[in-house]
Image (cartoon, rainbow, N blue to C red; front, side, top):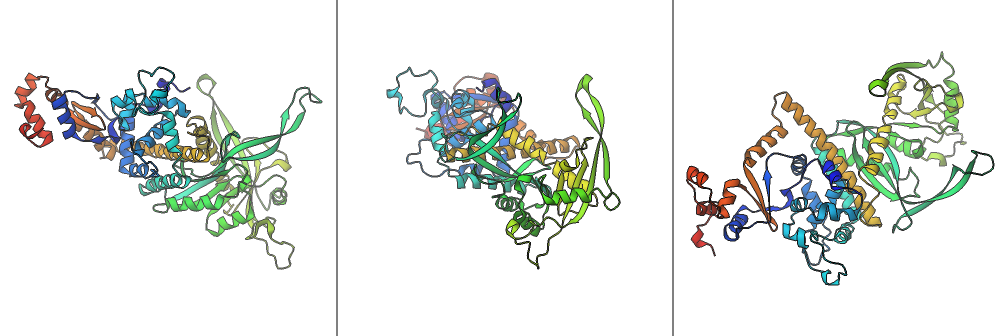
Length: 553
């Protein structure tokens, strides 16, 4: 279970008024006549998420959140955007399950104020529906919403709508120039594993070898059938920034190579405003000659490892034995291991052999493996290969040496090798991160719609927070150099605007006032300030409402 301390540590600081509606006049009138308020917070300086929301507003992502509304609510007691923001908090706050938001979000007065809920709603609920049916005592703090309400509304967002939201977010980042002009991308897929209880999931049965106690000889592997349920997620990843460019989802039994071209096309569309994909590295699970040929025809470089028993791989290894025709290229680097007293440096050797114009990749053509290579007029298409003779001081036997095929020139085989080596960042910094720390596999409901909403929202927020931290770092570097930056100007503006000010929440609205005006509107005398500024309570009221006190009802 996620604790409040963990939530606060994840959020880094508190969130407040950005999504409630500002109306200083209405709040001033309320203070003047009723002398009460729902909640008051000091506004001292920008917090992390304050800056984050400002960033989202600048790149126009907030309107995209509003467009998630499927317009299916018959009676809009609560605007749909408020429910979306609760889900956003769950994702960014790393709250594991939907049930946990009751204690961590829905009953938190400050966080709910950020979504436009007032203190009365947090304590007593947004409505009294279902209270008469309760068999247990009503808690002292009911929470602004019911957990089921959030979940039920979130799954009304169609897969198409939430997918469009994600793509629009990436397109907005591209407009900000967050990506390099030439993109070296990686493509991979991962399993979104569930149980058979998830409505709409797929299933696939695989044979795996496991160790079984008491089975024949000790330590012998036994082959068993295992059925997996769930979905599969395809993604295109920009290696330099670590930001996703496009994703798609399908059921788990679909082959890895099915959606490569579709997700690549979407990624190109998302970044076309300011960048272009130049290279794509993919794993051997995507080995499909027809797909690779299409990628090559699009003018993209690609790198992919061959399966160990493929004829093209055997041929490349044999050719690499001819050191005169294909000289090995060694590279030594110093690698640091461990920390503190256990820290040491190791000199690591990697040796590669580039083999150009390999003609035994007979599956690389417009028809793939379906092509009739026995025809007299068939002409094989050459690919280049890179054979890894030694990898980090380890020299495997000939039949186990890794072979990469590519359409990149292999005069310097380390260009191909380094491109593929960076693909591991996708597994470690994306898939593992979102599953372990962002709780990707815990949707609001066990349905297809719940999985889609959870996946696209999580991946979208992961991309946006990564971009925000990069933007923030760039702005701080400009500030350190004495140059003007949007970050510097924003912090200065916020501090000037909020110096000695308070934010007052009243129902669905908030107002921002100097602290002395809050007390004066509430009819609490502040003699020194009133004398120094030569201002009365009535003048403060008229300042915000734009009308004399006598004209008000």
